[in-house]
View 1 (cartoon, rainbow, N blue to C red):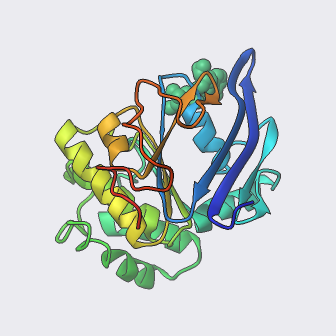
View 2 (view 1 turned 30 degrees about the vertical axis):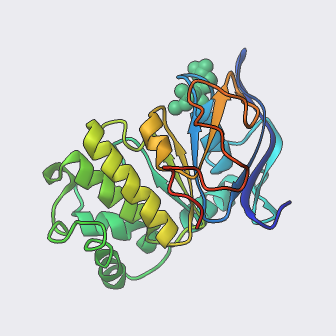
Length: 247
Ligand SMILES: Nc1ncnc2c1ncn2[C@@H]1O[C@H](COP(=O)(O)OP(=O)(O)O)[C@@H](O)[C@H]1O
Ligand SMILES: [Mg+2]
């Protein structure tokens, strides 16, 4: 595999009964990049993300993280891998309502064995940079949707993962808040040297990313093949205008 790629999916297939959610997908996520996965509802975006992230086992094909095969690990090892190497931001319902924001962020550290006081202390350092100063003691019900997603971003990054996965992370937010949150997600993952894989159907959300791939009926559209979401043509290896560019 390319030394540039952090995560690779090879010929991934996954069916639910007669439905081929993934019909053979090859995909590589490069180090430090923000990759948007777009496509219509039901095209297989979430299934692809779940297979790449070790949430779901593909029926066939392989997933490699930094050169090591991960799709064939048992549930225990995949669960540990998700906790230590990956971060997750979902549409909603991911924060524990009974815990204050700082403990929500500290949770992945505590699950990894960091003592509570130190985990919370470490968690709190994320609040200022994410525009959440003063929100540490609030429960999720006392936060706006945008604030709650920023807490979720902190929680996804607190373990310093290699890859952050986000499935429609701005789907429950109004457009302006959604785009601001998306920019913050891209900036924060880059700042922490993580790669980002974000599923979205919002072209402006995808515009915040470095690269866009499109899924249709369980397959990736050929790179460069213009689909309805395709951006203006650009030279390979050149920064895409308005997409944050190369680093
Ligand atoms: N757990 C499941 N059981 C049955 N069918 C599923 C399941 N998950 C996904 N599918 C089907 O697989 C296809 C792809 O789904 P999904 O990956 O969720 O698409 P997307 O995220 O692009 O909307 C759809 O036809 C969907 O109905
Ligand atoms: Mg989905």
